[in-house]
Structure formats: C-alpha cells, structure tokens
Amino acid sequence: MSLRQELLTSRAEATPIYVRLAAILREKVHQGEFAVGEALPSERDIAERMAVSRVTVRKAIDLLMREGVLSRRQGSGTYVAPRIEQPSSMLAGFSEDLRRRGLAAGSVWLEKATDLASPDEVIAFGFAVNTPVKRFRRIRTANGEPLALEHAVVPEAYLRDHNSVDSSLYAALALTGAKPVTGLQRVTASLATEEEAQHLGVPTGAAVLRIERRGYLADGTMVELTRSAYRGDRYDFVSELREI
Image 1 (cartoon, rainbow, N blue to C red):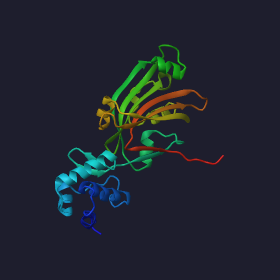
Image 2: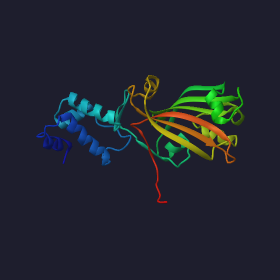
Image 3: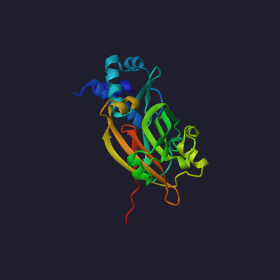
Image 4: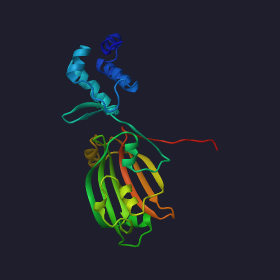
C-alpha cells in the first residue's frame, strides 16, 4: 500500500491528518524503509504525493522532530535521526563508540586550557590544592548533529599538552600511557539549561541525560573526570542483566 493509500484509509478516523501522517512516516522509519541518515523527500514532494497541504506535512515533520525520529539540517533537508544505544558496561571514548556504529564523530571545541583544579575536582581526584589540570569543553556531534555537551578534566601530570587532543581524548591519553582501563559512570535524568539547549539545538527544558564518568588506570589512579549532558531524544543507555 502506498503512503497516500495509507493516509486515505486513515482519514475516516477523528485523529488529525498531520498526526496520522506522522504515524505513517514513523512506522516507515521503524520498518527501515527510511534508513538512519537518509533524507526524506521535500515537504513539497510529500504534500503532492499525499494530496495534503505543506502546512500539514510541516506539522507532521515537526512532531517527529520533537520525538527525535527526524532531524533537520540547515540548508540541507530533513533526515532520519540516529539514536545511539550504548551498553552501560562498555568503556569506550565517544569517537571510538560512534565509529563502531558507522557514524561520523565530530567536535566543536569551546575550550582547551590549563587551569587549577576546582574544589570539587580536588576532592574527586584526591589532589593537593592548586594542582594543575587540563580542561576540555566541547560539543560532540554525530554525523554533524549536536549530541552532547562535554566537559572533561585530566591531571596535567598525565597530559602535558592540551593541544595534543584533536578528536579523541582517549587516543591522546593512550600516547602517554594513561588511557583509562576501568571506569565508573553515573547517569541521571535532567532538563537542559538555557546554555545547554543553545549548544545542543533543543528547547530549554528539553530532556537530557547527565553523565559523569571517572576513568582509572590499572593501579586505581583516577585520570579522567568527564561530565556531559546528552540529548535525551538521541541517546539511550542499555544494560545486560544476569540472574544471580
């Protein structure tokens, strides 16, 4: 059955047409008929094929964008949005994780700097007061779309040159022999602040996952403290459960 036939079949229902159109498009995505990263036809093409107004098409697409099913790229079009599932037991850097999934990892750097550890960082790492650290703050992207706002802190003793970090912090730490081999990660649900929303391209108050990761060397030394805000409409954490 064509898209138009499906829509015509549903028009006898009381549900608004744009909601029915959104449901049909959503199902096509879930069935893989529109693949992740694939561009949808233009609003004009969809409107002509479905014999509805462009306003109806736009409202359906906006609904799916709010759900995280679709995303819009400036001057490019509307695409099926990637949704990332990360096993909570896996210790991997952002870049490595996305490459494994066939997605292009990117960064928009906001800060690379040498600084003194803040009071809470002194406590977390067990530092002496005024210990120097390297501070990294950036927007992490998947296929060019903002996915997370990340702030990482590493002791200067394990990473002398902050400019050595290009796309992957873990790759830079591996070169110094200080890549974490174990870690602890805490995930909490929250709402995006105004600044976070601006960087992530979501409304203020949108759902985010706040993730704090602490990375350790084999001897238990802590070498990484990363705090991130991930878009709740793009990222899922999954856990494998075993009977005890």
